Length: 217
Ligand code: BG6
Ligand code: MG
Image (cartoon, rainbow, N blue to C red; front, side, top):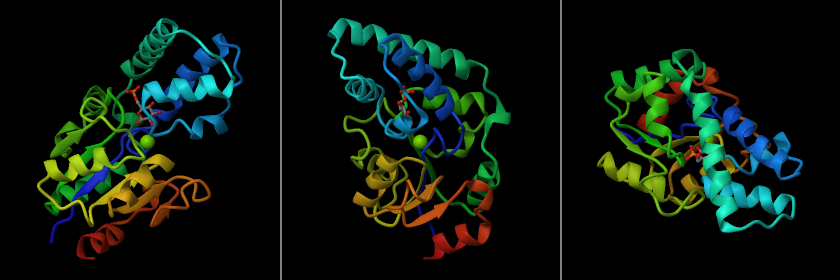
């Protein structure tokens, strides 16, 4: 039996959420906006443009389109400087064994990420070869919680959308998976990701029996 296994990137495979946070925090500080870790939860899984709008709304700040473009560019340059230094040591614990298990058992694997930097990050951490399909922020027009990214990923794998399995650390991503009638596996705080079908604190606690059961469900 085969199931489409779709992985989010930031916060699931690698802990890049911390770099996104640092880059946004710098922008917020420049704008005189207080930006906390709690605020940051709203930004997870959300596109770059939408993230800036959320921060501006938090501070009740209005700026011109030109200023927005400059800040978006600055944010990405700062973020790229962080990910430049990434290597395999930044793959989150438990992820590699799960990918290896799925590969060994001939399960189709895709990436479903909102990020436009997904490919270079997978390259940096040397995981590109595990993925049969990659759908990222460059491919979709509708961001999570719209299911487009996951629907495209299942299509690229030549698998049905219904019953595909999605690993997500964001509320928007869990909602996207659920809308597409996929099986959502929340990675992170259960309090935050309570809409997910399954919850795990991290990949370390996901064992092969769980993955095997998902395949045979
Ligand atoms: C998501 C992250 O994966 O990608 C968001 O959770 C981020 O925080 C989004 O804003 C877009 O990423 P990028 O790399 O295109 O700015
Ligand atoms: Mg994520």
